[in-house]
Image 1 (cartoon, rainbow, N blue to C red):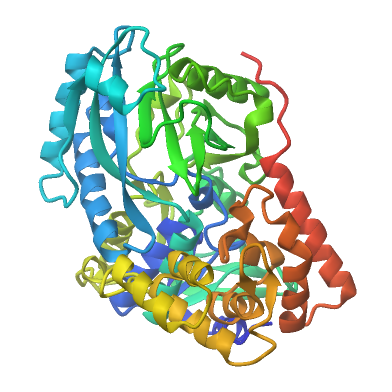
Image 2: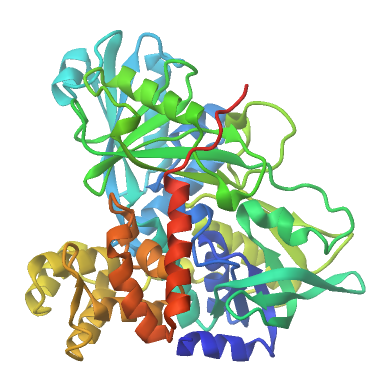
Length: 545
């Protein structure tokens, strides 16, 4: 057990001002904001940080161009403001990304409507650092995007949004920020029952998933921000709670560059149903999708179904006729569940993407549940939630996080830091660049640990340049507990085409030495990781309409 986990477990005997249930970007953002305001905070998650919805998104930091069609202008403005904050405060993780939006004769929206949308998008991001959009006719568009279908093409708009390649690392850094502000952070800790006394939630029973030990946690206020699991947190603790979450699933395909693949990201309308799809350059490959289908079931086991794959491939091949993508082209798929408000009927695309603070009063005091929320707007969601909590606790203070950087943010800028780190680290250039890309300014601490002993400087995965010290760093400094944590959400090897399977044995050996696993536990960790990988490869049964 790491020393940080041991300390967190010891603190469970104390009463907290705030218990946050759910360790995705929104829950961690709430913990960070609250701790910065001086509240004593415990944030828990039944799995690893960001291992739920936060890791299964399109990895976009965007204003939500499609939300303009639903007249959610306030949400777009909020998202664009937070996009700019992330570009400034987490430049090592979030970078500008150029998009092209093609205009076709058969689009669901006329090209004049799309152009008007782009003008409004720019107007709502008046304080941005990114370039404004430009529009092009058919000839210029085909020159910019020669692989694009010309059938009915009328022109295009080119604009900028942003991308977080490693959404998993974003969650980890928010956790680190919360911890540095004084929050107690404990992953692999499941809320099994809310504690209710005299009509008020006063904490929760929390089970340590690693040992099975149950702790009774006392808290003056509780926020349920478990995403698609929010109803499960309430189940069994409240008398017949109303359903809050009506999740929709979004599937993405990961493919290698293909004939005609674009040099920028594409945002376009599907020919078959008019819904927005994207083709996004990502880690030297392309991320294509996503779908938007109603989902019932366990969000932890959701996967792609054949109908979704057929749909994404068909629409991508229509847009890029030379691509000829097939199932054999897919490196892997991944699917997440959006924690949207429950709606019994209607088009999933019409469900609002705004976050909702659900107050359980008058039936139950001391509890808020968060419904919805986007990767982009976690900071604003957190500010709104903690404004409510601090008022209810008579501790109202202003949020401080808008003026703060995430821990890995290099003060001198990402490019300058990368060049300096490459010169000073004494690591091979490719290794230094990878560390800077994954850890930002904290790469210096990784490099220092690697250099501290011969054992930690040993290269354990030559193809990536992964050294033992980096694995140990994620355990000691970033609360990695399992093999999956290290591979999939810290070192980011789990996003390689083989999903980290080739590195599994070597990394498990280092983890075993650091965490004291015996042979049986090491074998169990490997088996668990292989089971986790099935989410990326196995299909659900074909959807029935």
